[in-house]
Image (cartoon, rainbow, N blue to C red; front, side, top):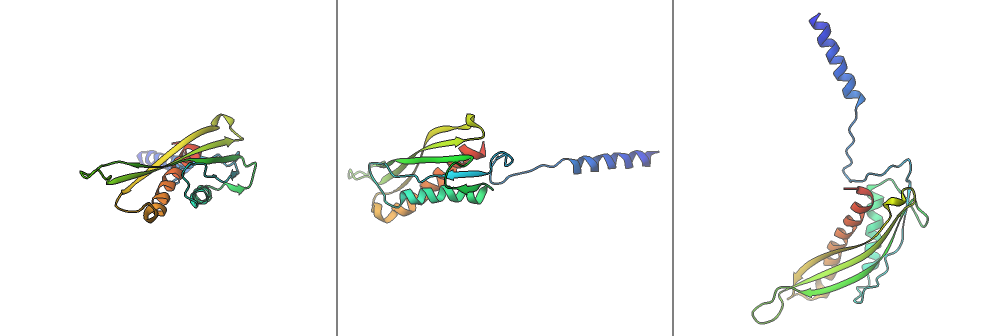
Amino acid sequence: MVRKNILGICCVLLMSITACSISYKFNGASIDYSKVSSISIHDFPNQAPMVYPPLSQMLTEKVKDIYTRQTRLQMVTSNGDLDLEGEIIGYELTPLAVKENAMESQTRLTITIRVRYTNRTAPEDDYEQSFTAYQEYDSSRMLDDVQAELCTAIIEELVDQIYNTTVANW
């Protein structure tokens, strides 16, 4: 009798373990692929007063890259179920720490972008929002020497912010 009860309990446990499945998404995306299958990502033109020429293309390509790598969404040129567009609106240098000889020792490069997100399957998720990220560098270095490296790091952070706000639902 005890053996039958133990066997019955084991069967119930086994069935409940196989019947339940837990799905972890390490990329953070929470997309209902039965409703959403495509995304259109438009170029992010640089409308900032101070312009770094490759910035627009760098940002646009990184945004496309994260959705390609971390989702199953099909990239389309227009009218995707999800639509991302925006522009670079700020590219600013700010002196931070000042040495005793009145020369700044740290400078902050800040980039701000404005993003418009449209979700054609769930319009309540639509938004327009600005995102900002920055990196600091030693002022003894010329901006031309560090600009590409700084922009790459800033773009990574901006793209993560966009991704997390649109499909990660953190």
